[in-house]
Image (cartoon, helix red, strand yellow):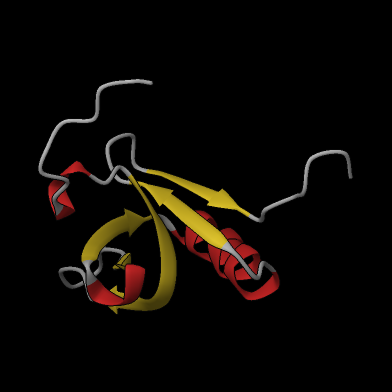
Length: 89
């Protein structure tokens, strides 16, 4: 059995389930494009992350988040993982 560092804390959990999210748009300087952000609320608020997105990524992520029931986020690698498929399916 592998050694698990003790105690297990919020900072030691590397993969969390996305429970809520919020897109925002921040205006840029006059004549400059704005910036999209995506706030991820993970494990019912145990962890939060804010991602800065370009317009294409924001559009694609909104589609994926709308159409995927279960989403996980790897905090250390900053990776969103969409969907869970049972092995053998």
